[in-house]
Image (cartoon, rainbow, N blue to C red; front, side, top):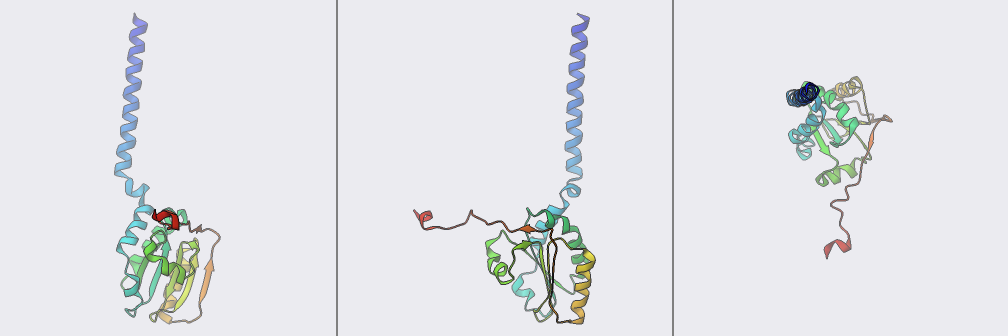
Length: 181
């Protein structure tokens, strides 16, 4: 009888401890969700707060144009650095963020030959491409190129890092002759 009572107490204690652990994990995720999901949140906010590309290329300011995707791990990794740059330079430079999964930006994806992301293009005040960065980049390297925009150096520089994501084809909106039955 005493053995059954101990087993019942152990079972109750185990369940209580399990519930307590699950509760702590859930509360931690809620409290620290910005820390855990900061990069994904930053990417979404970039797209939502982005300057329209048509305005950016006509308002006589240099432009920082980034092609990204929310699923891109390298884009997520670079998001805090890009956010720092945006906070520092957004008064003097247009920041445009185009999600490659949005068909609305297909013409820009083609125009700037985007086949790996993140891709950052820097433009001078006149809309001329000054630098193109493909893949993971150091914040310092991008910062130097942004600072050179002010000097209006005309040589186009293309910097490619092997760490980038290949654009995935969006087959959800693909149209074929048979899709109109």
